Length: 137
Image 1: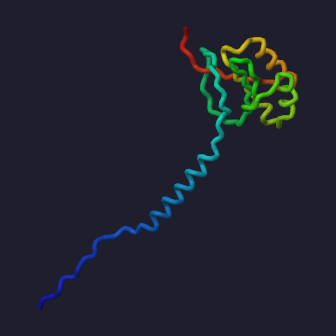
Image 2 (image 1 turned 120 degrees about the vertical axis):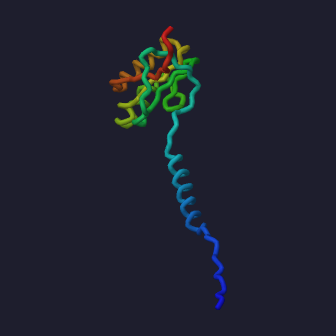
């Protein structure tokens, strides 16, 4: 007696569940990249420092920047030096405590001192400055 051989079906991959997983991953990556907040874009050439250390940006902080033309900006918005004290005084305490100075190396020393005075009068106790790592010269 001869039996008819059973036809074996080729294994198939269920694509519907894979599409669901890929869609969820795509949504996760799109949403997670929108949470990244960049620093205000200001063209500044930072001075070199032998003791500069790269640290992770754990806190969201405000940035006071002085460019090569002595223009002062608070979080990317232009502001007069005379108005800087009032603007910084109105910042929330968390942003005021993590305020940082970012000055171009071609900015005049007098303008940087004016900015630092305005920040001290506004109640900023600790004022870190941005530098970039440089080789010893």
